Length: 506
Image (cartoon, rainbow, N blue to C red; front, side, top):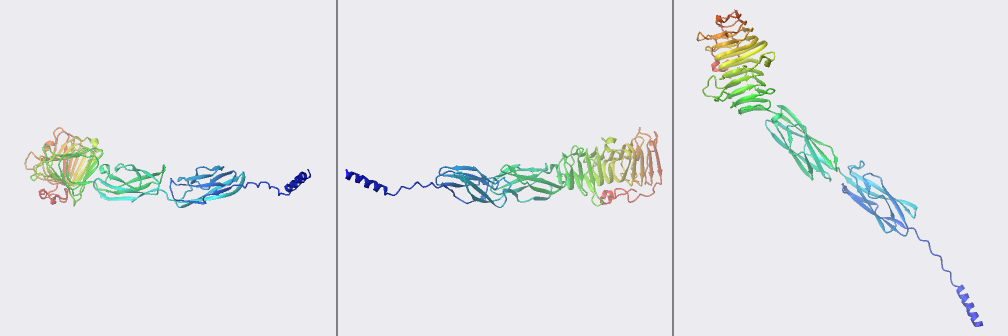
């Protein structure tokens, strides 16, 4: 028993002499590891995006929020919690943000976090990249056509600068400038063809603008404006077929006219000084119908000529000029016409308050010179020459008062030089020459039977004679200071240019 007691005593002493077991150590807090502190996006475009990783190193809970200091850098998710493994932070670019500039751009992402609900210092990640706006570029901003006479065309070359998809719309500000297309998409380059249709273009300088507006990411960009300009020369020369004018026309040079011309009301036909119009002889004599306006103003050294294209001509190879509205004929030769200037269809109201403007005109080899001229106010005919006129040189109808000054009536076989088919007219002759008639039934002046109360006077006229039988029905004629010699420096002023005009009154 003593031995057993001693054994237990030694056992207790042995056990009491061993070292004590230490208490367990505390678990350390985890650490936040950011995979990158800088991301370079390179060239910034709409598809630009990037990422970095947040990793938890240790045991515990990490919560985080991320903010961007620039609007152009957009986070896909702004907060999270790292319970296991890691998170991937993704971001992309907003090209429409106003703080994105055309240059190097830098944004900072700030990571705020707590570890086991205790705040820790922030982490920052720098994001950078270079941005260039996508724009539309044209190869020019002006196109000059110089002087044009017909439809012309050209094209504008387009180029995209930048990385984004670009579409555009194009418009013209003038109806006569027509675009081949009004929209398109540019991958790299493109072009817009256009043409100028002069059908409705007025003569002289012209200008139009083509506006091309780009669109990138659904947003309209700065328009490009290309100015188109030049001068439209609408003069027509050479062979002209019969037609009805659809716009104002101007003729010049040598013209061969092969058919009837009609100038509608509201339009005008202009004949340039020096223009020579040779008119084709047709089964039905060709006429120039003026419902609108004829402007045929030559110059003393540039006479306008209307004449037959025949080798052997007659006094009815063409019908003449029929005016029903407005007319100016000066420094012109009208030859071989049935009726050179015909106003038969006109009412007084058509002319308004005066006769058409007719002076310095040579009427040659026509059946009638001027037919049925009308006026409701005082008017003057000056510097006209009539030669080889068969029937009438001048025929008046419904004329109030007309002064015939410095005119020559040189058709010695003309039936009646001046035919008065009007009532209550005042017709005055001043400084005019008349050729002697070959036959007794021919006369210089006659009031047609049935017309009355016309007062006619003549002053300083050479060889003006009339049939006394006209002095009935209140018609009166008075001549003063009759000239014994032919007046000089009268008439159209250019007859000497033509052989048939060199024979003077004698």
